Length: 151
Image 1 (cartoon, helix red, strand yellow):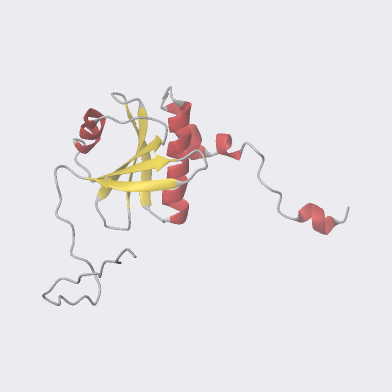
Image 2 (tube, rainbow, N blue to C red):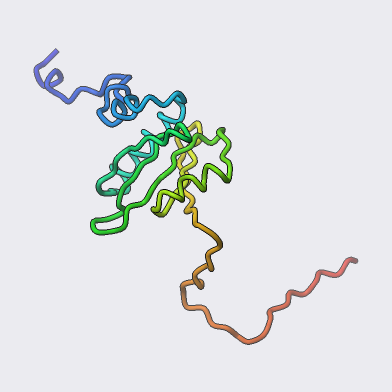
């Protein structure tokens, strides 16, 4: 082999996740559910590497036996709590209440078996939705569709 090929960047070992410092820190929290720890690591990587969140850290919730992530969406933004959860795991109202009672805005992140992440903002009570954005104009009347008549 030539020196050029040997000096090329080597791919990470197949178990690089297990050696990652963030994963090691999560494992040190001694959470029994390894699927939840893995989900938390995937969400951590998404928040820090893709979404560029700031000051992301992991915290153990002893009551729920889960790893929670805390971080800022951007510099100077308020701290948010993210609850990573494997999609197959159920969640109770009491669990959501426990995380909301921490005092920070909460995001629930469902992690599918194929590593797809779906974030859902959770609130304390009902929240009125924002009006739709865009150049919409109220015509002051309802639009009706004609029904197709049967032959």
